[in-house]
Image (cartoon, rainbow, N blue to C red; front, side, top):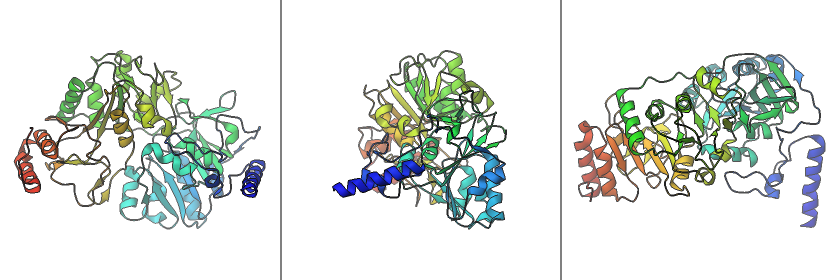
Amino acid sequence: MKNSGLKVLKQVGVAVARGAALPRGVAATCGLRGFATSRPACLILREPAAPNGGKTPQVLSAEEAVGVIKSGDMVFMHGTSATPAHLVNAMAAHGKNSSLENVKVCHIHTEGPGTYMLPEYEGIFRSVSFFIAKNARKAVNEGRGDFIPVFLGEIPKLFYREIIRPDVALVSITPPDQHGYCSLGTSVDTTKAGIETAKHLVGQVNSKLPWTIGDGIVHVSHFDSLVYKDEATHVIPVPQLSDADKLIGKNIAENLVEDGATLQMGIGAIPDAVLSSLKGHKDLGVHTEMFTDGVVPLVECGAITNSKKNIYQGKILSSFIVGSEKVFKFVDRNPSVVLNRIDWVNDTTVIGQNPKVTAINSCIEVDITGQVCADSIGERMFSGVGGQIDFIRGAAQAQDGKGKPIIALHSVTNKGESKIVPTLKVGAGVVTTRNHVHYVVTEWGIAHLFGRTLRQRAHALIQVAHPDHRETLEKAAFQRYGYMPSAD
């Protein structure tokens, strides 16, 4: 044991001296903590907030900077609205021009065209999604890209446990301030883990990227090269609310969201509809993985004050931002908004310390027992696990016992098919189990499932299904269980 320990220390010392990553397996030898907020016990990580010994990055063209990528490398790509499009396109061109092979690109949701995921780049690049965005769906479903099912809050573990070992990280940053510090802008989430563990950092310096406060502060000395290129932060249009969206929003706002509640909400029309119905509420707080434009009017009208929260009281806590220029302007250098690393923001024990945690998430379909599919349409992958379970569980385990985990969905698809179904489609993924679900909300009402029998659950869910499908669902429930669904 003594000699083994000395060997490990020697490896660590060599790595420190060379500024390199630890040899494979050393982290496992040292041991890792097993919690969502865990950090490696002795794996040497880059600490982005500390200056890196006076190192000065090279200023290069995009073509020169991505030239470091070679065949067989793993590249980490900054995601969501901060996706560095200029570097994405340069990397794609480099792959073709240099005849690269088998370069893997790992990322969460990215915006932009995702050039390297197009069919003509097959064999050169292979996308590895932790959450499938629109630009990655075709590649994943055609077998040219991969998907890793993983809770959003646990993605950093993939880096810290050396399951994902990035050779190069391509990230967007703001111009450095007078002290040499940059911001990761609108996407801190998994990016902090990516830049902590990547061997080589390339930063696209973009003066149009909002400066955000929190864990996304990086000293410029950590970068190996900088590429100066301004481009607009990727915008996701604010959805137009349908009548069904508005009814769902009203059902949740008037019946499930209390004054002083701490909110988590996903992206899309339904969360926006809920937010638009909350202007009469008081002292709301926000602790969420992401937020978009709908939060801004609630801050401006005084409905969101964050005054009752226990974690970052008085401040909105998130991990990434998507939306329009309106929300980007709102977060830019705003000290009332904090963006922190996803493994802490989405830790259920952290979430649950807040009062009246109200988690609002959407899905693709729900079966009559309460199983929730949110990542696929049958066998076709659509999105991913994301932070749904992180917050559904965080709300359910809230210390004050007043948390509300909510699944919200339209009762029917655009084709009129019921989204509340006897059984999930063949191949559909169960993201949220029936054991996790407390409330299911449609435009027809609220089904409270926690503590209910299968018979009672079926009854409650059928009551919030579209009337055109209720008789069919009742017959299916009877055939399945041998009894009629009932509230008693």
